[in-house]
Length: 407
Image (cartoon, rainbow, N blue to C red; front, side):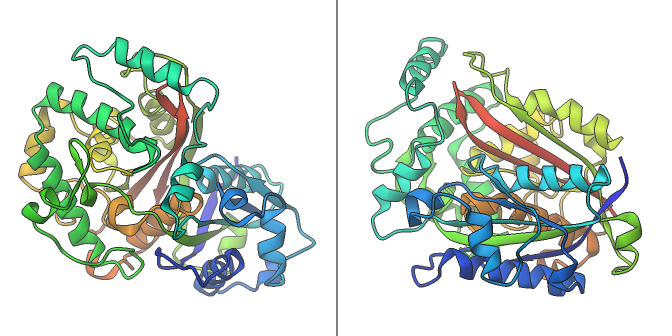
């Protein structure tokens, strides 16, 4: 494999944009990335486009990449459409990295986008709810409940109607983690406070207001232990990245961010919560990148609900489970801490327009490694990581992409 660099990134502010089309979101993100790279769009040799639910939300079922990119004059080149739930644009990134690394192309575009917000929230919840095995998911959920040592219920009243069914899954996993490691709802509230603090420093975040522990705990119950401020908001957005070979990157930038490794995996049908896709992929990404978990300086995690931030850190072997309470209480995960986690604000405050989420994470890590993250800048990071999952198969994540970047 050839060395591959990210030379440009761009994104919209994530938010609720009834007046914007999918073409508007893609144009804004891609033009931002091209400007960041100092690159003319005619230099792009291929495009990899991630989107999850445009068909349900907008009616645009097919050729989404061609429709959105041709509107801004990017056409003729190979345009690949990738769908993998919330991991759609991270999966697109992995394919783009593979193509450049293999010598197929020298300069490619990755873009993720989503129109997820609608005045009818049930429409959004139904769209998100398709990221499961629709024929068998209730059977899998019941099997998980039967194997729960504490008798926890996975699917609770109101799931899929008053909230995304994924919040029921996060609640189920959170309660197990809380019992294992002594985490309380107040600890989760502290993480949410951190997320909102970071989001308040991020001009691209959907939520940009600091909150208190009391405000988090009193923000409205979603499904225990989750409150509203512990859950990612529904919204729209776009994000993009430009990848080049080493020789091509040298023509455009003196500060390339190198892709040290990128791995993709799929879920398994299992009732063992410890047999998770994150646990299985973690050793592979560290081996691919030639680093260990102790070498990571900054990370963006898939915290669609606050508890998943700590679950992911444990499963990635970045923090031992018995140490997680200390890490939360002593601020290890804050921007100035030992292991800055989600300096962007994470999904819970930056937002989670699912098709754009993975590339949005990559945007943040690239900016951090360049030292261009402004008020949320981590001190002198050398190695950054993204963790982006999508969907449920059985009770495991259905797809996962882990990336490690170096400067």
